Length: 459
Ligand code: ADP
Image (cartoon, rainbow, N blue to C red; front, side, top):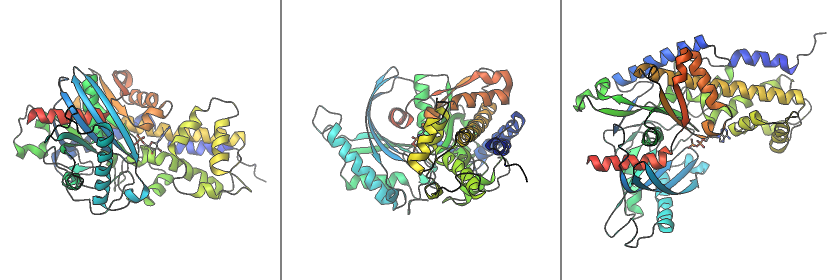
């Protein structure tokens, strides 16, 4: 009879499915660059390259008190930022968790919730005495970080193109979210004025440059994945009609998570990626993001494990129902598995027994860890392709630049940054070492405040 395959034999199959060669990466980076360029020529492209109406870099001299509100895919965060000039700031903040109901309910209700949290925050942290930042009749300027693709005509306006990151709230797509938010602010009678509607990626770009002027690109690796950079107005073909000084610059929110959506001709997708896509609430969309971001990596790994359960390879005789729940395997588990320092892989024992009531053998645990590594490494190397596309487009390679990066995946996944750097080296060779990612400054808090301040100065 045929000899039984070992876990190491199984691993080889997944290695070939999830590994990206340098040559393949260069092809992806090139196609990515062409896609970015296309997005600048006309509206409605797959990667929309959204003009942000954030003009140029901050001077570092911005000062004053600003509120910042960040509606992420998981949490709502409210901050009070005091910019002190010369790159200094102070920040006070609170976080509020979004319920599944809020993430799948009605748009105006979601903004009402934002206003309600702001009210609580202002009451506990600011008060309304004459000493505080809210003086009689004054409105506190607010930067609203709304990190979903919007088309903007001005900095305090934004029509939602579509929800991403698993949020699917009704009556919002196609609407001006700044106006909806203003309605909620009025309803709660808050002395606050929305000054700038920004994307977290743009905020990250501006905040990181404020502190480290070598920063030219920002990338977010959180629930979603996205990038922003500073573009020459003369190269943004699709806003030529606005007659903005061609010598000026404007930040572009790439919304690069959409790369390769619908046609799926550039990215190497496995059948697990196809399942993730087809069973998501937005099939076809955000194709690049679905291979990279925190929302999906755990699910990809879970699907591989489920396949091996179906094939009778894993957990024979055990009840696997807990693992059969879509999205039950958090990407944080991949981080934990990769960072397990013990020979016995005790952390992995813990994850499987505590969360899924499953017993594992050492060979299985080694397999899970190796699988996490394959999936995490692929995500990092694909991200490198995107960074390489911007670097190539803007000609940053010789001079080198810093890439401000943020999000739990970047901050907490062991070795993620190293793998991005290794990817840049594989694409560009030695010069790739000139491109270095660093932990970004807080874009949705500080960045948002700086942009609100830049906007105030411009007006
Ligand atoms: P958001 O993008 O929603 O503002 P985060 O940057 O914290 O917030 O990203 C949340 C995503 O990061 C979730 O999808 C979660 O699964 C993932 N995540 C959380 N902790 C970790 C971790 N330790 N390692 C890797 N991914 C993580």
